[in-house]
Structure formats: structure tokens, C-alpha cells
Image 1 (cartoon, rainbow, N blue to C red):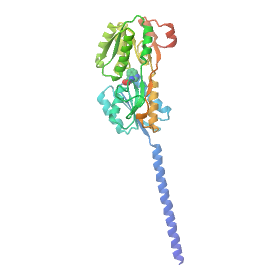
Image 2: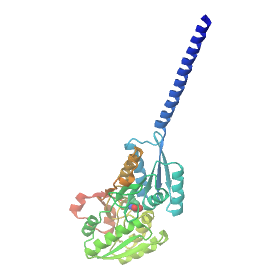
Image 3: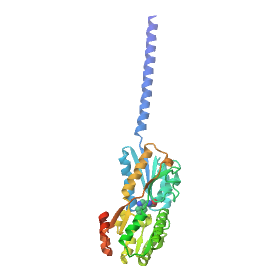
Image 4: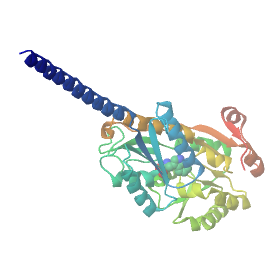
Length: 338
Ligand code: TRP
């Protein structure tokens, strides 16, 4: 009888011990799972179309924008960065690579990169980095309600203000060359606007469309010889070989009016344009929003940035014999490029 009691107690104790043990194992597993959940790094895939100072700064800005929102590379996110070097087939393979890395959000810097990403997935959110014409390039249905899995930053050149500055800097000019690359959808809208504006203001505007970077020198030369000044939009191929344009235009002392701050410091005469790094920061913030759980890109309005800063290259103006009116000088940021 006594023994039975003891055996009973031992069994009871064993059951309790096993229970406690099992419970602890269970909860340990649970903690392990939740730990993994919170520690798991999210991945940001960035695809840049080509190298030129503006896109390089935008990509740097994306990383800074993520950081400002608390997403730091190596701490809580992995950043996979790839550059297509202007090659469409590379953009497509790189898109697959970024998808294979299980990216949680994709960022496309410049139109061809954003398009490659958008064509590669209809699920992972794609954030557009500084895209000139998202609707025209078929990336979104509308700026307010993009639809699909794409949203991001749309930067527009303030063409009307640019032409006010053009008038003030070159009061005698009659003939404008519009220099851009025919393959870039992002340049089309800006060139259409600039052409319309030029004609309304009584200029004679001629298009010089390069079909590859090999043609830039020759077309820039004709543009410079045949016109009073050259207008360059936010065109990636031209930006990538901008020095070639300046080499040609310098020969005839023809000013080149540009659409981005970096091209002013590289020898352009002036712009009303956006700080490229800041555009990247805004793009990075939208990517952070996805990482925080807003995966509904289709209902997230595009961030349209259409203002610009006036920047004038004082050294170039002196070289070309252009007088900068005093009131404009006061308003502008003066730089000394190239
Ligand atoms: N907006 C361009 C596009 O959609 C990309 C771009 C941003 C760009 N900043 C630029 C191109 C400056 C040339 C220069 O592709």
C-alpha cells in the first residue's frame, strides 16, 4: 500500500516534470520563432539604369532616405545595388537577380530601370526613383492612383521658369537646338513641353535626336553651329556623355542650357533644376514606407516634385560673354564649373 502511494507520487511528479519540460521547450521554440521574426533583415533591391553624376547621387540619396526612416544597411536591412550600365539586357537579368534575392521592395533609378523592374514583377512593390513621365512611360495609370505595384517620385523640369531664365540670359537668341536621345521616353515629354514653350515665345526650335551615344559629338556640333543656344533635358544618355556636348559647344561658344544642377557644374550655363540627392532621399522614404508594411503601391500617390533651384555657372558666363542681370544674380546660386 505504501509502495503504491510512492509509485503514484513518482508518476505524478514525472507527469508534472514532463509537462513543465514540454511547456518550456514549446515556449523556447516560440521565442526562437519570434526572435527570428523581428531580427530577420528585410532586403531592398536598387537598380540604377546607367552611371552619371545625377543618378549616382539619387542612389546615394535613396540609402540616406531609408536611414532617415530607421532602416540602416547591415543593421536591419540588406541593400542589393546593381547598375545596368545602360544595357537593356543587363537590366532584365539584374531584375531577376534582385527578385532571386527575395527583395521586399525594389527601387528603379531612371525610367529604363524602373520599367525593367515593373516588367519583372507584379507583386513586389517597385518605387520609381526620379522618373520624368511615369504615365507616359506606362509605369502607372495615374499619379494619384497608380494601380498595380508601382509608385514613387516623379520629377518634372519646371520648363516655364526655365524659359523665363533663358530669356533673361540670352535676350538676343532666336534659334534653339533641342538635344536629346530618341530612345528615352523620359526625354520625350520634356522635349515636347520645351518645344511648345519655345514656339509660343517666338523661337525657332529644332530637334537634334541622337539614336546612340556614338552620335552625340556629331549632333552636338551641328546643334552648336546652327543655333544660338542648346537646350538639354534630363536625358540619361546625354548626361552620361555630357563632356562631349560641352567640348563641341565650346568650339563655337554656344551656351548649353540644362535641366539639372550637375550639368551646370560640368559646363552648362544655367538651369532651374532639382537637387538630385534630395530626390533620392524622397525615393528612399517611400521605400521605407513599404518596409514598414504599406505594400499597396497601387493606392499610394506618386510624389510629384516640380519646383527647382536657379543655378548659374559664373565662369562659363564670363567665358561666353554672357551678362547675368543683377536681379537674377541675387536670386541664383552661382557656381564655377568646368
Ligand atoms: N528623370 C530621368 C528618367 O526618368 C532620370 C533622371 C533623374 C535624370 N535625374 C536626371 C536624367 C538627371 C538625366 C539627368 O529617366
